[in-house]
Amino acid sequence: MSQLSYFTEEGLKKLKDELHQLKTHERLDISKQIAEARDKGDLSENAEYDAAKEAQGLLELKISKLEEIVSNARLIDESTLDLSKVLILSKVKIKNLANGAIMTYTLVAQNEADLKANKISVDSPIGKGLLGKKAGEVADIVVPSGTMKFEVLEISR
Image (cartoon, rainbow, N blue to C red):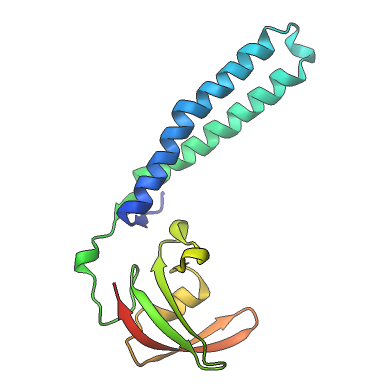
């Protein structure tokens, strides 16, 4: 049974664009490589042909996985999100109670997480620990190095 994945409109478009790129350009490139290698003669001793066929298999596997993700994708309607508690797509300002550091993250689906853009996965330890918390609450989050305490300062969209 396939697992549903939740995406923002931007995240789903990015995924569909990647799938289109693989299906149109990458498939064509590999087909050309196979044809060129085939033209070089005996296929039983042709390393280029073997490499191109292996690359084709890996590409088809990747395309298949992306098609499955897209077919099970669900868009998140940001306008219906409850801003009273931390949910997926919430922009949350938190304070690390151990060192006083204040950080702002947006909680996103796992496949849209990007720490450089301050987007953390709802499946990460911090993401899981913040889900359902309200402004002013403290989240005890178990991370590999121990337990951290974060105060939820603000929730927005």
